[in-house]
Image 1 (cartoon, rainbow, N blue to C red):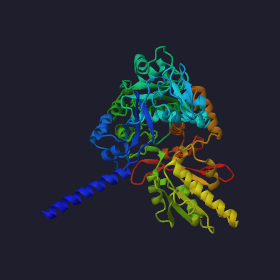
Image 2: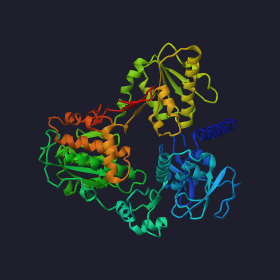
Image 3: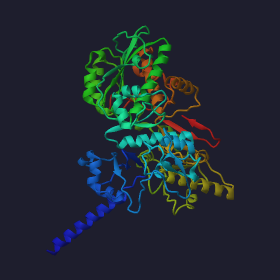
Image 4: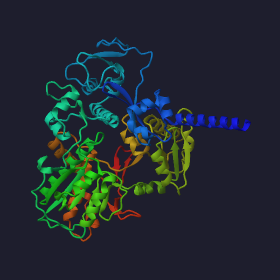
Length: 605
């Protein structure tokens, strides 16, 4: 009996420890969005998260989590994005009046007809997040005319128009990541209710009703709600959207063994989920527009191409249906589909026809001699950094209280056979100790694993301070460089001067150098066609299309050789495809290394 009680007690203790451990691992998100007048946290499920731990940090019951995120009823999955309702604080009392009470350190702004959160942030130069946080009683997507908003005086002028526009885009992505019944769209120049109804295949009345639009006019750069509606369109001819394709001339060919004759027309199928995808729909549209610019250039080179655009609806069954249609019979090249689980029907067709299939954005898992992966393969990520190892006698991996887990795992594998030191840096206790790990007799390479923006900033500042103070006191100098995660490129508040002073390097899957003449020319043509700046997805669409379509016509007996000979015509890094170990598929080996130099230049290789 005593043994049984002890066993029960031990079980209770272990259960409690498990719960406490899970709670400790769950980090409360600071990202908030407003959907239909209700505030939500945007939470990314991490390893160790449970309903209990999430409920504790957000003060909600697991039933509330499941009610707002029905897919979680089957369990939580790492990488899943869920929304958590913001529970009101008991001490906060909201006033019903539109007029806000005076508050020290703030000025008031009375909302005028047609104003948006974006336009008001831009007017005062304040971060969008500050405007939203300080005015939680109003919906940032539907500001009522006459409402009084708080404007934080000390932050006026802190944010540039470009930063505010980026924050507006990020808010859209955040709200789309947790929206179940709609997607959110930022109105672009030239867009109308009619064009949006065609783009999303939804009646105009549905858009106006979802956004209380009574005058039929859309406000430029306002964010509107597009109710989800299943698209029935399967095939769209490119020349019906933008006249960049040549007339249709059917010319079957075996392009894997021999090139097309230049007096023939290449049949190209582009397979994208252009409708029905909440979070990424804009990215795919940007990719498609980059494809069209590439085809226009190819046409000017005297080559003839016919493009068919297929909406995959993110379903393998839809892909199989598309492949079986007569319009697919004479295809010479397939760009897409985007996702691994959509590839099987396309590969079955392409292997029988012996035509290339390019996976434009994802890392592929399938094995096929006709399959090419444009995204650089993880196996080759750090090859270009070997020079940093051979030239750096003192390699120090700097961890922090919160590391970038993915980057840390990659670094561990990269340095597995290389002697290096490990140092745990906590800005609260180790501010002056980092000087002890600098070796003044050797070049130094610091690999910084910190994940969040504040930790990265403090770590870099401490390395710089330790180096500068000791150099000033002792007149000693030694080469110093820092390797960081490419995710740092998303951080806007980091002191970029530290990048140059410390020789920061990143390894990225793509990079666009807008000082490059090819990119400047592309930007000019893209803006002329679409009245907006291209995104990195636009560049990717151009590069993939330019290289693979031209390879169809390039002389040579091997398609592998032909596709690898065209890198100097692309906007981003050159592409080089090799057979993947243990697979018949071909993967791109070319990662981009971005290095910041002390003379305030940036080297991309």
